[in-house]
Each structure stands twice: as structure tokens, then as C-alpha cells.
Image 1 (cartoon, rainbow, N blue to C red):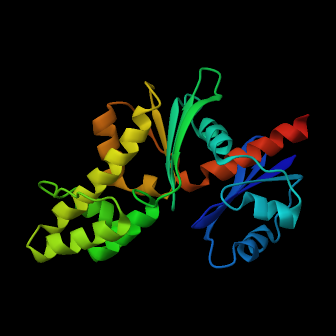
Image 2: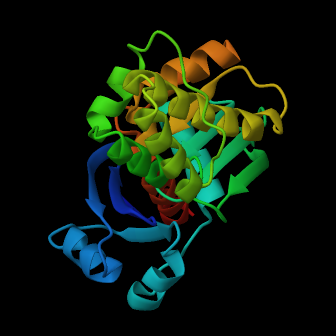
Image 3: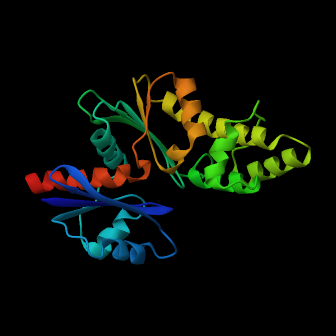
Length: 251
């Protein structure tokens, strides 16, 4: 039996296909201005017995494909366990929101926090800050690790933070130090959300920001626990949605 999961995010659309419990295919594409057209294109040529949607656009997708949907929280919980059966907590820093999830001993979601009303500290925020410093996203996390010290970033509002970065550079601040300061500010925001979950023994870091080596390093140092990152951290939600379909096929 083949189960497909699709995660319609604010910035990207992710597809994952599971066959007999194994990940057989995955793909990530920008959402663009017409996410349903992108979704149709991603599904072309794919064969599946079940399809399940999650993410921001899941209800819109359901209207087009008449398929079941599950919440992002449940999808990320299931997806993280697929990659790391020992998962205790999850941090997903996506394009426009941040989620923190705590799992109980049986792998069920016991608590979660979600920041989806402001882009501060998200992937989009990081893109804008990198652009303000004239770095690519690949460069951004690497150069931040080379800084001798971090410049303090006071505001997490995207508009004000961008102005603050420009002001710091114009006043002679070290560019790498500003980059590190931005990373520390984003990490502090995520750590505040994680702190509301209570204690946990490890953390699965998901979402596009999980590719960033500086963010991984800061989280590991601040938390003092293993930071587990899937090979492709962006498809965790899609895999979780596919697993939901596996359960339906088996029942």
C-alpha cells in the first residue's frame, strides 16, 4: 500500500510518499502565488492508495482533492517519530510560524506552543535579515559561526529589526557579529517557547531553518541535550500526513 502526504505550507509545499513503511519519494517546492497549481504539478505521475493533507493550505487542498486532513501539530509529531523513534520534543521553525511540541512516553502530543501571528523569528524573518546583510541563506549560518562576539539585536519585529541591522552596519558594527546577534535573538525566541513545554531529553529540529548550522549549534549549547535533525527537515509534516494515511489503509 502506498500513502502520500502533502504539507501545504506558507512558503513551500512538501510531498512525501511511504510504501510498506519506507520513505520512497519526497519533494519540496515553493508555494508560489498559486499553491494549488503547484500541488497539482507535484502530484503528476505519482501513484498512491491514500492521500492526506496538512499545513496552512490543507483545507483548500481538501476542497480540490476531497481528501482527509490532519493538523500540523499531529503531523509533525508523527513525522518526527518516523525519523527518530526516541523523539521527546519537536521544534519547527517554518517560513511564517514556529511550533514547539512535547510528546509523552507513548509518542502522543501532550503539549504544544505555536507562534503563527507574527513572522518574527521565522524562516522569512531570517531571509530578510540575511538579505539586509547581503548574505545568501547558505552563507548566513556559516559566517555567523565565525563571529568573535554577537551584536545585540533589540527588536524582533521584522521591520524594526531590519532598520536596526542597517543602523548597526552604518555605525561600523562587525557584519559577522550582527549575523550572530540575529541568530541568538531567533534562538532565544524559540527557547522561550520550548521552555513552556517543560523538561525533555532530546529535541527534533524540523523546518527549513534546521539546515542552518549556527542555529543548531546555539540550540545544542543552550539546551545541553541532543539536537536531532532529519536528513531533510522540511518534509517532517508531509511524512506525518502520509503516516496518517497508512493508519487508514490498515484499518
